[in-house]
Image 1 (cartoon, helix red, strand yellow):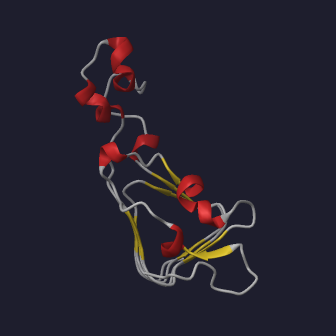
Image 2 (cartoon, rainbow, N blue to C red; image 1 turned 60 degrees about the horizontal axis):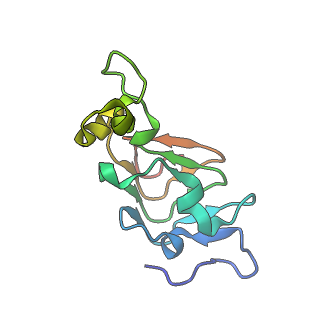
Length: 140
């Protein structure tokens, strides 16, 4: 794990991600960088890893030497509504109002699985990576 946050002196727009990510369900390889010229890149988890709720036990795995551009988003399963029901409405989320079983909350969306990014991957400006996607080594 990197202890150094900023790879270049005086550049606070680029960070080593594994130095700023704290969520144990997000694994970041060494030397993977994130650049953000709009927001604080140290807020990557908050601003870029979306709908990542503990109920699904899903992971974001990003390899070594990856370059992630400003605004790239990682959308997890809770961002999707189920397509297996009569309705796409998220009834199970409102279990209290609809008198449903709380254990069925995860049925409100389709679980596509973890997001896995290989080594030496370049993710471009404002790219959106959806739940269940696996990107191989060296991909752009």
